Amino acid sequence: MRPSLLTIGLIGACATPPEECAAPEIEVSPADGVNDAFILDPVTARLDPPMADAQLAVEGVAGVSSVDAEGVVTFTPDGPLEPLTAYTATLSWCDASTSWTFMTSALGMPLDEPEALDGAVFRVQPWDAEWIEPANANGVVTLLGEPTAFLLRVDFLGDNALGFTAGVADPDAEDAQDLCLPTAALPDAALVGAIFSAPAGGGTVDAELDWGGAPLPIDGLRFDGVFTADGGAWARGSLAGELQVSGLATALGEVELGEAEVCSQLAGFGVDCQPCTSGEGQCLPFHLERVSAERVGAAFAEVDVRGCDPGCPEAADNPECEG
Image (cartoon, rainbow, N blue to C red; front, side, top):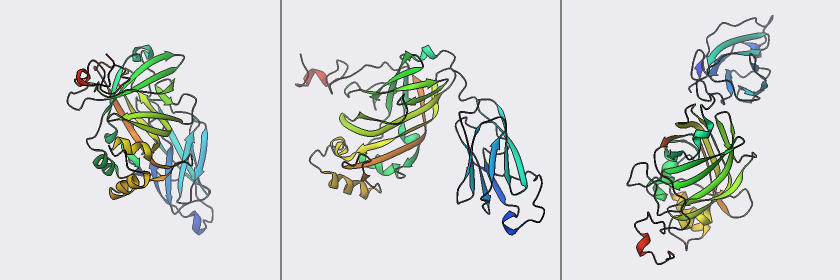
């Protein structure tokens, strides 16, 4: 959502305003008068020139106000805002203040039937998300080859918990699963209203996913999103973690390459390796925002061994398959 310049009149003024209390230019988000603000976004105001004593509050909402050196004042609510609700934000500095109003969107309304998520399959295309890190997503796509879509099956576990199993979408058949590639169980997620977040206990977790049949170890994995009320999609999700470069070499089909060689290839595409947070080896950090998914009618099967599922055309001639 784009911020907007606030032109609402001021209430009060400094009696003998010092230079630092001159009326600033104010840019706010959510913008004044919008009706599609997201329930999990902070409320912000950028002041130019900055005002160190500026405070931001939202009427009827508990939270914390903070200001950074660049003059951005942020109000972080203690919890999600309510969907389809009008709010009034008030910014104050010196002896002056100004207010604006906004309304949240329907995203975040309670699920009509949470149990109906059991067995639902969602198609996720990471390349359609907003890439915070690495910023050069195109370089990653070029390096790894054809962009891959994923299918996620949801299992309703009760007690406000969901399970997720990830598979790879068939590039040659819309909304179908590639049964030649293994699936991977993801961390269980907590479900609060329509909001899910994994791992369920908070923080992050280490996991292993599949990319083109190669295991990809991921450190510090976390993901979340918000379901639509009918359970037909989710939106405004995030995904973050660190890909271990040693596993990335296998995914690239270059099992003989060491970390230095893989990082050199990545650098050629404008993507830099960084030391893993664990302190061991090199990693490719990733952080995606605005991840979305659509529910599809695809059948989903758990695949344990690459190329051995009966639905895989290669299974009959694969000597590694039992029987």
